[in-house]
Image (cartoon, rainbow, N blue to C red):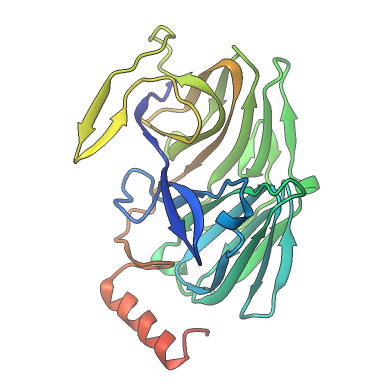
Length: 301
């Protein structure tokens, strides 16, 4: 097995989206080469309703797939095709925007006012950008869960993992999307498609992702590249994004409080990316066309 090293570790940055929702963005609206076929990952975690209840009112999507994963609270959604529903704790919505859809999402906290979830954007290859929109609403009980002998626990949202298959089907990027919990001080290993790009996003606890030949330990060296400060080979904690090098296995040593993270991988599309907010195409001309259709009322096909 070839272990993937953590080639870059960054921290999610606070930002505001929708009608004033405060969230943290792990990546998005920048160079997509390191995360292709993915475009954006938002962590909308908050304990203050005033920071999220304004939600994400009506907005367009085209050329992408959005994956909403709720851990606490719920998200009420509806769209221009007449679909509507509510996602609760542990539920997933995988929306293929395709040729275009108008959509809104309104977060509602739990009884303690907590709201927590993630939204991941996956790119569509040019051959599928104008496909008909569709939804996959997956409720928590339909998601396979695997508990290892060492207590490591995995929810298989999409893709194949240890003989189990996630319930989300027919996604163009053919990704693997896992929610993994590793108990305190346990070393765990996870297979990853050799040809896929992969990242981990830590949202509870801490741990060390490292090559098998490196000793465990806490290293705190920092570096700067392109004006962005990032961490190298450091113990990762809350809201850390880990980008991996090539290989077919990810290894992690959980810290003394354990570790929970998303492990996401997918094969790169390697096509030009042009985007305008939630519209992502292959050229500026296609973006201009989409905006013109929005203005003329012909965006929905």
